[in-house]
Length: 275
Length: 275
Image (cartoon, rainbow over all chains, first blue to last red; front, side):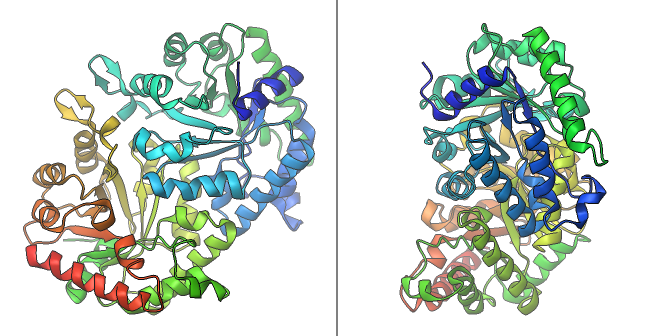
């Protein structure tokens, strides 16, 4: 039985929307449609339009905070408005902060305050390099989703993550540690890139039920069929499959929100075909 | 010959102030003296007083961004004011953003924009877990210092960092990779906790000249003599030794800035004794 609030929310919305698609709200100011730039808060207005056009087709939204930080405090104000809007208008949809944070123990409390208390996110991505002891302020958040980087989607991910320790790659050691020791609050998920379907398959075998956040579909080259076959659990679920640029920048004209809806629907249907 | 702007700045100030002390401006709102809370920007005023009282005794300041993010946008405004103040009033002192960032390639550009273009820091701490290819937007910053986590100061740092790959620990592999491959712009530094003097000694042997950022002195338990003996280069330099709480929270009364000066001086002299 799932008791974690974030995971409950996720399971409910997967059923309701029949979707495993997460939209990455990586709303770079230089890439959003030009006509929005005349408005007072182009990034928020862009996000709002994308959200309104896709809310019935997704299982989560995932802004990557780096794209908002890029614009300084103004960008973070747009992010705050986006999260506030989602929480008010679509409270059933989980919101993931892609921040890949990690520091030593007492410092992480600052990040926890920022991401959960100040912004109001439901989940956050976290880097495992400093170990469990360091990230406990995240792991202690019983109601939140703590999504730990395991095998990231970038081409050079293997430089450290594929190093073998006693026959096991670092990413596998991370996956096993999270599963056996870090997940004491049943709030952990793993990040595994769609660009590494073999690894995804292997981790799914080791951890049959945990939910995986899977970036790298679309613009980064991950293929849907192989990803879903490799990553699904017995119920054909257990995945949050993220697409960012392929959806939100599908058109840079006035039809951008409609184009985003069209691409989301396409991805949702394609994923469901293989679940 | 050092061509990197950040490292040049660092070498100059080390000479001028005859100091390897870096003050960690980890200015938690709940820990700063109560009488400051009546003012309009308590965190900035706290930082300003500490800086004014210590600027002739340090080689760098290092705000950890987590403590500012904890207060949301208001906290980040205090951070911006602090960096602006430092750049204007004490332009010779390098400012390090302790952010431990890392994402995939194009996303890191957002962090680079935030930390260097928006805030105006001279250097940033970066997490190596995603590999060189991912963090190239940081490594490409020829004028900045890119400080890569190697062996962090927290008690549980070894959980992943001490895993052995063909007889070498992960932290050693990171150190060697940074030294041989990541440092193509001669802008890399390493983070090694004062709490691990044996590792510090070993890394100094492998990399005789690189500058190390060394946190963990004081509140975290690292000892000055062992740290300096282990970490110094041939010239008795090559270290940025950070103390945060031990200096900035030395007193929580009206004498906090004077107390910070006293503690900074004490640490500076103790370090210099062993250089």
